[in-house]
Length: 163
Picture (tube, rainbow, N blue to C red):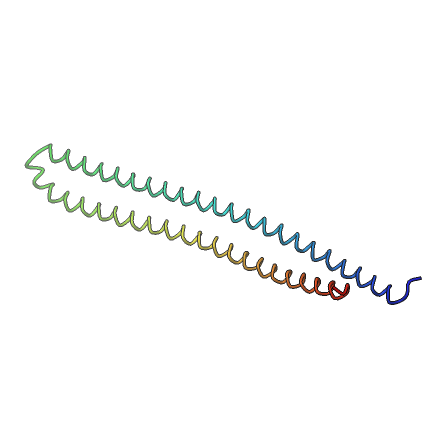
């Protein structure tokens, strides 16, 4: 039979081994969570880039549509001018005012729509960034706690083995 002191020493080593195994499992889980978070970040970054590209395409399409509308208005104005000088003199005043109002309205509308799209995109991007930073912060805190627990266990093991 083993003396009581040796049995206590073996029991302490088994307890430390179990704690080390638990710590190792937690460490592996933390690494797995960290990899998943990195994958998620990569996906979010890809999604953000795609959203930015879609936003750029929408802006370009919007600008092309507005340029087309402006070109249509210009063509309409030119056609009316060529039809008759007498009619044109009267319509010129009306059309200039109307054209300027339509142009101002289209310009204001496009500026508002562009600002709205940009604002929505920035809000979505900020929300994604905030979520990512919160997860990173949580993982860093968990890592710090696990490192402290690891250091305590290492110190206990060193103390038990007399190193």
